[in-house]
Image (cartoon, rainbow, N blue to C red; front, side):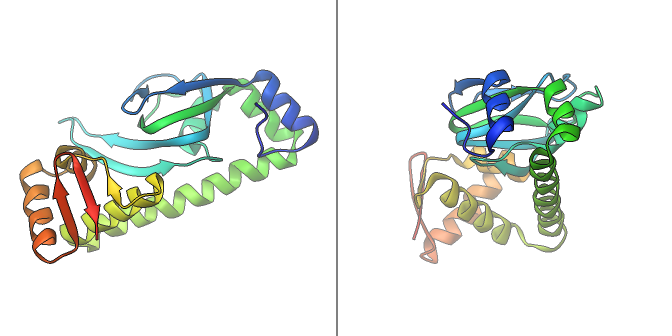
Length: 201
């Protein structure tokens, strides 16, 4: 299937050298400290990019949506450095895997590809700033509601197939804290809770 992001010769090369693969939700496609050999472009579904500390606590950095890729993977890959992030399939996804040497070479050959990479850089930088601001200035209940709204956009539904533990992991807090805040939200009429599902009212 052709990648709709690019035109003419670049589109031909993307589809010639890229390998299309499908992944189930929950699949880890990139681990911290691993070398990056391919650059993933999301065709369907979504991927979450996570940072993990020495105590295995996680914090969600950003989501990669259809038509996007991971700038951190690109930068680590072209410089042959180990990954500083972990990438996990958020919802069943189809990815186009581009060899990292091709992704680097196309920068000099195709202005369209350069624009794609630099736009990714700008988007991811803004998202990381939002994450920093959220951690520094927002209360946990505000952060949780923001995360639920992000997931509603990703899944195109307000009934979210997510557990309290998953939310806790992405927010670098405990399940008990998330459960308590969600119960407060339910009492306030913001959400409705059921087994492994949360409905944004």
